[in-house]
Length: 293
Image (cartoon, rainbow, N blue to C red; front, side):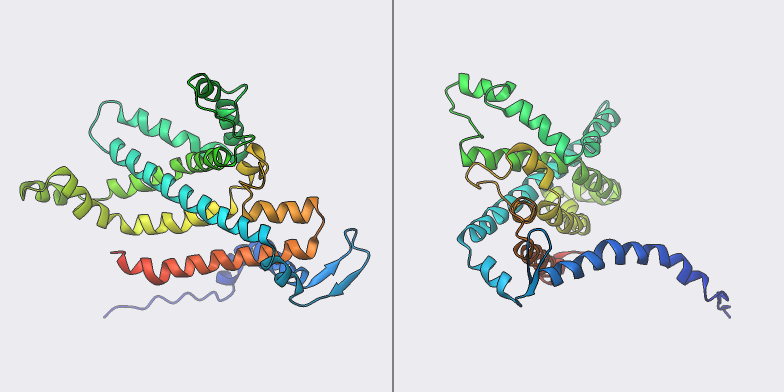
């Protein structure tokens, strides 16, 4: 007969959870509640007068053509960053997982970029692709390509996508490599004995077994593209030229900090939060069904 283990102390579990709960309330729920309250107010830039306006700020934001343009830019930017960062991370992890000489050195070098802050990585890309001082930027111009991300919106969007994706590749690489190394070699050997080619083994054996890791990275990368790329956009293009690289999170900063539209900026932050929650819920609703745990 199995003996049930009963933990007698009823206070200690709550005491252990208290620090995490306090951090969550102070740094997530309290700011979120403040943003919701602020989004229904019209405030003087200096905070001297406040008026309750209900949903007027939301109506103003959602009928603004510049905001809708920013919404389109954000979706294009996020989709490109997620796809590029995850595909590159998976490709590098698959290559590093092979039995090659010096594999440990390659793995260490591929993990290093994860330690670089987004603003610092943006500065590195600026010095590489700047049309005047950048090595690659000047080389493109010498070969007849009119590269100038400071004036061309498409060039600027491509550059911030590359910089944001590069900053995330190392993170994806770590998780994909861990997932690959957890797959039993006997499974791959059995597939090889059955005559499966390397491509068939990857798509029919390895990739389905990586689906939990892929799904987790998809959710995390979407959140990263929407929220954590502010530093890259600010350091590289500041949302320009002509708002071509202005994402939702950067527009919240511009309208709230620079233009001092506190109510409109709060409404935008609430909308951004709802968009990310909706995308995450859709991923759990439809994509998680294809995940094999």
